[in-house]
Amino acid sequence: MADFYPALTLEIFTAVHAVWPEIVLPGSGAQATCFTSLSALMVNIIEEQKAQNDGDSTYSTPLPWAVVDIGIFTPDQGWGVASMLSRAPVTIWYIDAFPKSATSGSNQKDINAKAYDLATYFDQTQNAFTNFQVIEKSATDSGPDNAFNAYMRSALKTNLIGASVSWSPGFLVGP
Image (cartoon, rainbow, N blue to C red; front, top):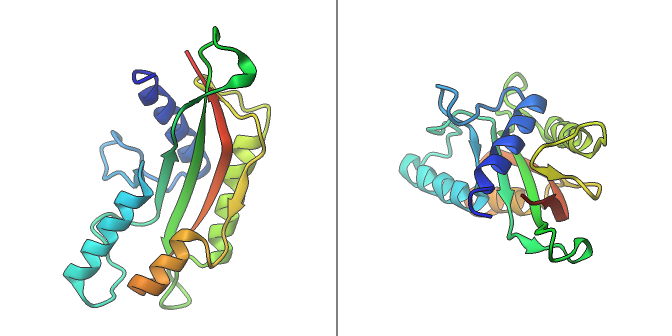
């Protein structure tokens, strides 16, 4: 399964970029704004906030950001041992800054729309993927109290907001 992961990640990144063209993919020649770990991104945000110590919304990586978080691969019991199929829960985040003025940044309404667009793209059955199958409909968490938003506002007092789209038990993957 280890050699399968890069192809899976690349295909998901490519689909994310198709829906959110403002997200810069790794290897595109520009600074990537698509990541694979929400917790690592949050640590980087904390470190940058400490360094700036001014609450400014300027980050070393330009906004907006996407995070593709692929969970633990578990055997898919419904498909049999011989098939070597697994499930991997997937959560994809869209993160941007809300405006300090009326003319800049995004607000929660805009980020909600971004999450909905991505969910629609992945959930449509005519979008066939090579390295995985979407079996269940997605769940969208774009509320002000989701894990990212609550932490960014309470602990760090940043102007970053996010919304996520997730699939659980996840995408069906296998060789």
